[in-house]
Length: 80
Image 1 (tube, rainbow, N blue to C red):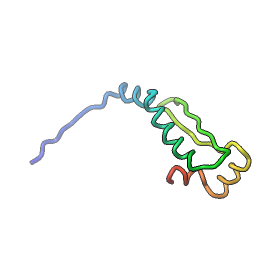
Image 2: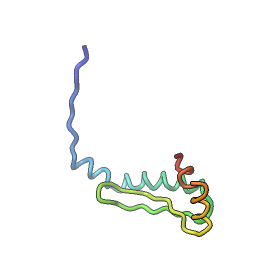
Image 3: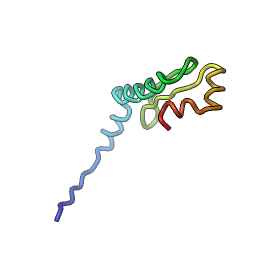
Image 4: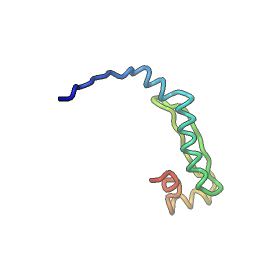
């Protein structure tokens, strides 16, 4: 028979981890990897939100917006 192991998360520690600079750089690296598969006209932005850090890939130029609208290029570059 196996023993049941219980643990309790340190919520303040998890919140601190999700907002840390290290996590921000991890998010940015995923976004930059997706950006490398896209053409010109796209950019990466990272920021710390209310609960965690975020990274976004956006279409800046009109041509990139049109391409993304027709083909979902950003979503495909992210693997979705």
